[in-house]
Amino acid sequence: KMADSEKQEEKQEEETKEPSPPPMPPLEAAGRRLERLLGGGLPDKERVLHTYANPVKVVRRWLGTASGAAGKATAADIAAAASLLLDPNGSSAVGRELLLSASEAAMEVDAPKEGKEPNYLTSASSREVEGWMLSLYVRILWKEGKHSEAYDFVTKGIPILLGHLDTASTKLTSLSGV
Image (cartoon, rainbow, N blue to C red; front, side, top):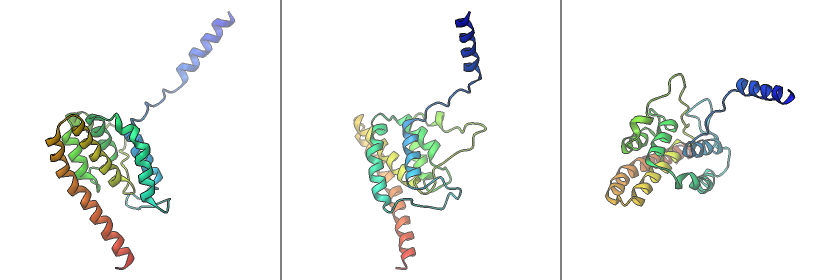
């Protein structure tokens, strides 16, 4: 009888426990990790606060740790991460659209989940994550032997990244008074 009552108690405990949320996909987890490292997630989406003195070193180290998630990524994984991380109205909107349109799975992942407020990356990390995902997609195409498609994608991705570099250098120049 004791064993039966213990089993009933365990069963009741299992029923009252809330189900744990599904694990975050690796690409999304890597993007959110960089957001935290660079001081993102602030209430003001346009405010950039670097918690480290050298954000370049932070991104370089992050790239090394994110390679595990990147190695197994598929085009659908990249499109899913882009739709969840990159704001369609933010600085990474063009790269987001390019990634979503390049993937056959874009139609499946682009629909927002009802009742859930989107939690896009802030300007602290969105451009870096966008560039990373663009390069991942090129890598996938190259590994599949789709060299001309990879080249076409690169010719669309490079101007996006150059635009981010121009914007960043303009902001730095205006801050320094040069």
